[in-house]
Figure 1 (cartoon, rainbow, N blue to C red):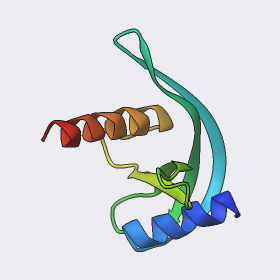
Figure 2 (figure 1 turned 90 degrees about the horizontal axis):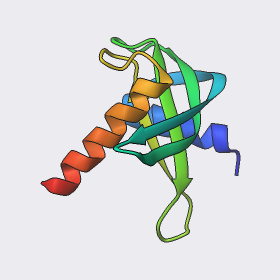
Figure 3 (figure 1 turned 180 degrees about the vertical axis):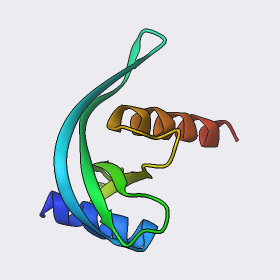
Length: 99
């Protein structure tokens, strides 16, 4: 599996545009004294998206061990960096788990 190609496919599927990988950034997010995220975030430049110029993305093995699950977050305020993308994704996941 080509990890970056898989993420590009997820961006295409989720946001309807092409992308080019720019850089990998290590992000460590601590919430209430616990590590909420410690990993690599891929930064992509978007091609042809109406509202965003960048997308932040990362993946982890799917729960069924068949493939990967990807998170893709557009750079639209309040998301302005890999760090804020992780924070927003964590908050969204926590909110959906409470619902």
